[in-house]
Length: 195
Image (tube, rainbow, N blue to C red; front, side, top):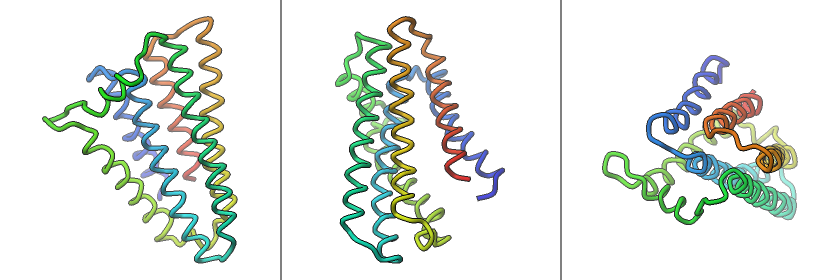
């Protein structure tokens, strides 16, 4: 993808949570649930990539299983730390209530849970086709490198969440600071990862 198109795509991806926060009263956790859903879709697509890599390059399925388990553990750790950070920022939060509110949020009369989840997975699958299958990256990308890049992202999220948790013990910033910080950091990471 050309650099100009990549920047436009990242800008549009960042605009949705910012607009949601500014105009639709989305909370930090509500926005994080979008990112968590996207991370999960990316984790699932990484398994599709792994299958394609093994079919093209050969290799042991046990390596895929090993990296998949490590990936799942780092994903679970990142999700846990996100929740710990949100709790540190807002101890009164009711996670179950917030997840239900996220799922049942209505836009144009439709509950987003029924539309958003298929849409997120569809977008992830389309990106997989355009950026992995069409350029035949499965011939050159190694399984270990693929999983290490995903686990690196999860570890960065874990570390950032740990920092937020620690800082929140002393000072809790306004939600806008967290929203814009999340959007900027995600955008910078995605820009770097898609180069």
